[in-house]
Length: 416
Image (cartoon, rainbow, N blue to C red; front, side, top):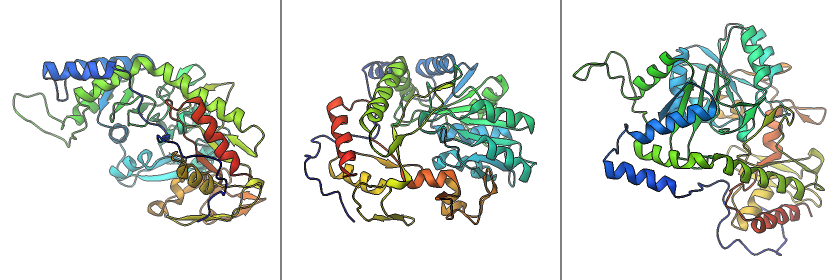
């Protein structure tokens, strides 16, 4: 596979990551406190304080600390009553963890195409989906790369059809839409503290709710559904999903730095935007009048006319170098050559082999059968087009300005 032939750069001596944990010291203090007090399991002060702090930050009444964001999504599906054969409308361009919990409970994901303003679920396509599947009563909405979806518009459509929203805010902790924190827009919400998130516990997640019964059910299910008895009494299936007090110590130590991390991520986004202003590219968009992302990942979209010839199979990609043009594969391979980590845009779920038989709805209706077709020079669906032309840039908030300037220069060289 071809590489850009520009040899003017030396590889980074230390790898520049996509997004790695940024630790501050308080995390170790809380972890050490758990160790000294011997509260190493799934109860303790760190869990209580992490739940209290997250509920306050997001603006919900209850937060339930769990082992991962995926665990939180799974319990959200149980709370929603998803069962075998129940159809659920899901964000299409997202990580598979958004969708897999629907399958855990036997549900059938129906994927809703993306809109270009925020790269999230398209409210117009969602309305069209209800015309085709009027029986659907649940919607899973993700806020991609830390950017809020058009949450009010989606809620209007959901309310019109009597459907409930599960908000996957795994990537968007600290982001706001019309002044309200993401994670608080759904009937149930979730966040993630995976190692690459803007706030990390190394792992972990939380389920967010305003209903005490929902919070208590999730908490019970997460500890193997043990009943209130002196012995181990079980009347329903449970899970080992509770967050440990040690992991909660990391989260607790991270949370005071949330706004600091967001400011650092935003500065990275703005430097990229300024550094690429005369290239045929754009940055991942957001609704500046209504939302403030947390800028978790900075992403690049190459103009269609500036794309070199580029093709992907299920697990390989190749391209032909063209003067003045580039493609995601060339840029990502070139960054890797210089010891910097980028990533392709999430491959839409409707394109995944495992979901090839699931419904997929665009604003024009059923999108199946034309996912590879071009319409007036662009893909028939938005998500596939963004996947084809987009990539995630190194967005680590420990990256120095000098390192970022070098990455900008490397990317610019790909268009020479």
